[in-house]
Image (tube, rainbow, N blue to C red; front, side, top):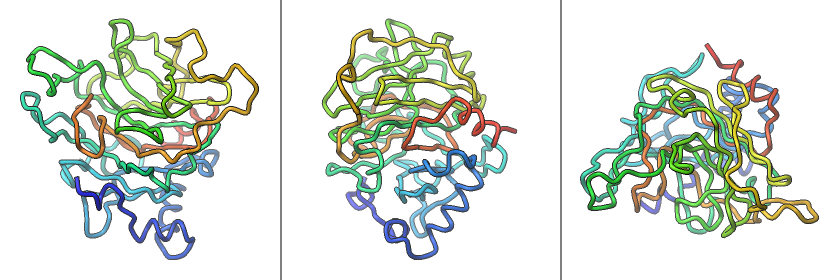
Length: 315
């Protein structure tokens, strides 16, 4: 990946930051169509994969307020596929492992990364809460073969969906993440969060079999909320809460003492979609899946608003 794409700041971003020009108005119209009114003010970044950057279709325009472009890594424009997760959808993004037998960097994934932090994602610096939601269609029934080891039977322990990186992330460590990951020997759908850079993570894992929550070949709306003030996490499927449990009973986010408690005051180093390391230096946890209508919000969305968002778009 070129350094230009890693830290790309287009005229769209300039327009969003300065409040001038046509692009922000176009983004606002898209958000209005794809986001329930109750959520619109909190949408920092939004990707519907129908808005390639003019002149560079390997970049996708942010339809949220931040103007954070993401790269369609390795597959470029071929990763936009005509699949419709919800009413009004045009394209979805396809991510996948390309060659499991070779150690390399050719997996299809999406995101952005900057060692100095992504300034346009500053809304997630020193924040009390975050929500990630979107539509997901899996086309795999187990984690992919591990292309980073010599053992042909090795598999990754997770399937990456969508996440927001920490301010000190190497491209893998996250502040907020939707993922399928091994929990005590069993793959589970989880919300995994980290309040402090360099600190411990907490995981909220679904009790139900992940194959029931995400049947192969079926579009499903997922949401995860992260309340950094109280230490609470939640998962939702098709607008309804998912029963689950915390994998740690202690206080990994250090919220037991006097507050308020917020995340580290650092700009996230980026976003990862369909696998880790959006700077394309390592392969990890690829997802053979399609995604659409991804939203990154700077608040803890209520259960009723998650339901409203699902019903706003569900066919």
